[in-house]
Length: 205
Image (cartoon, rainbow, N blue to C red; front, side, top):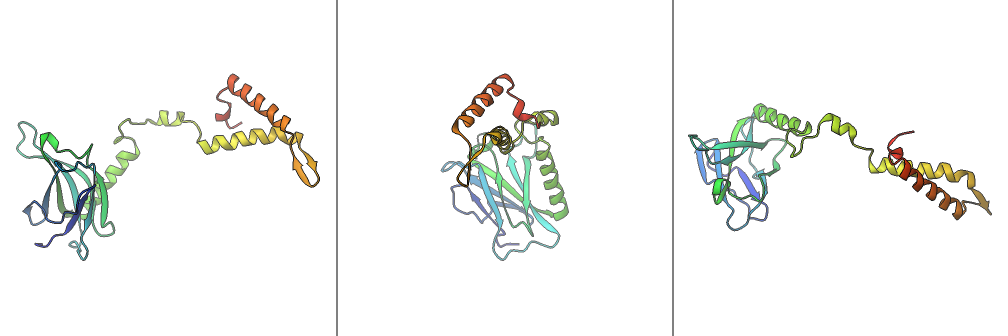
């Protein structure tokens, strides 16, 4: 596979199609300079007309320098692209600065079995959904303490007002009206109840 397979577009930079290095026929490294423009997101896509070998997908990695005592650099799985998902956007970090003082961000793309790539992507999605990948994990108990949505609160305020004002309604010709004083009375009582029982709207009474 001598022809370029992938296009990479770091945010705010031109498209890149030629790998910096090709360690094996199925692995590609892209060293992207950050000296001209730092970036935190990158789009990776299959070039037009490219079809990956059957049963394979492209696994995307962020490659960082080896820690002291390590022989090989570290790689963090970011996701994948392939048949049915020909492009994706990846967050690579804060500001896209080179890792460990490097002036380049290094991305690796590896052709691997599609089932393996899909399984790792599913694991990532599951970890994010449970809060494992969040900056501040949210426990189930904390989630249960979250109040109702803004829409629900608005509906309950309207319901409270309607129930109070309905008994004051009258007609002016063929139009049903409510005296302004009745609305003022409702608002005064509503404010008073909020002060004495701030959580009453959160209860679905």
